[in-house]
Length: 242
Image (cartoon, rainbow, N blue to C red; front, side, top):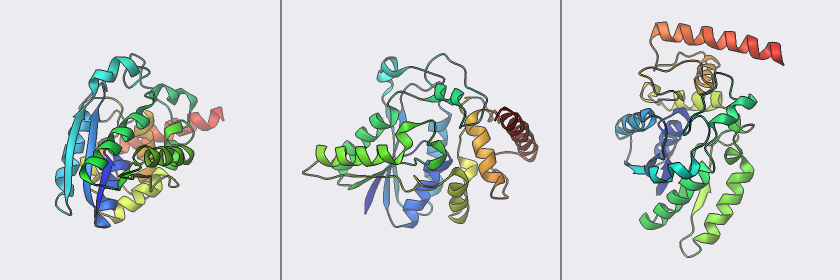
């Protein structure tokens, strides 16, 4: 049973990797370079795959599609805007949208699935992304699933997003049960040596571990204490504005 997975090297897609392996899939993971400002997620995607090979069969390709960068460069991840230091649900996080990214990546993944005889393409869209990212919503998943089926009628491909009704905290809960080695994952939007702890995805990651009464294993004890402090300060600021 083969499945193609979009793997970013972050918490969500790494948990989905282990979820699929636990269900007996032979996983063909694709990590894309589309002109991001840094290579950290690519670096960590390689690390998590090497660990995952200890529990199941994983093939991994890093795909360079950076020639499309000038066509989609917009916002904080691929253009010149600064990464917002705010919660994921705040409007300012729209700066982190990469135009049509999931449509592009999933279309390529579907073509690859047809080539290797895999009937399913997976990505780790989840409920916590709903408010800001339209291409992480159930409506998008359903529409693209239909389009991929129609576009590959002689070799049907299904699009699946098993986490689409789950929050980030629920994904981490599942990952802890699956023994996902989160120390080999990267979430931060900044490309520094260590996570910044204050961008939207760092705050969301900290919250997810806190809600599971767990410490983020990527961070040192000192970093974790600082992450919790930053999270609590940002939460107070956010609630005071609400």
